[in-house]
Amino acid sequence: MSVMLFALSGGAVRDLRGEMTQAELAKKAGVARATVIRIERGQSSSITIDTANRIAEALGVNVTDFVLFKTREQIDRERKQKRRGKG
Image (cartoon, rainbow, N blue to C red; front, side, top):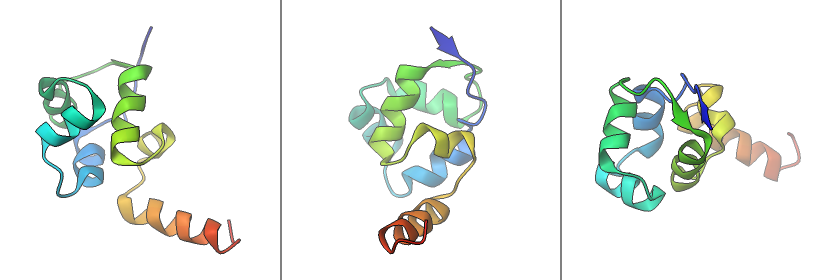
């Protein structure tokens, strides 16, 4: 089953992978490097939810973080707030 995840744009993936290379992300997620490249270039109009979940897990985030266009800083800030009991 394919699902359109337009938020898996290059900007979101690039921001969230930080210093990790495309090849490292692909290996960690268990997807082809070409898949990561296509997503980052905005050339992948739809991907499977499984692929989205694999990439999110490899980046240490939830798929919803992609959908909501969250940056790494926003995600980290929310996690800190939850640990402090403010979320």
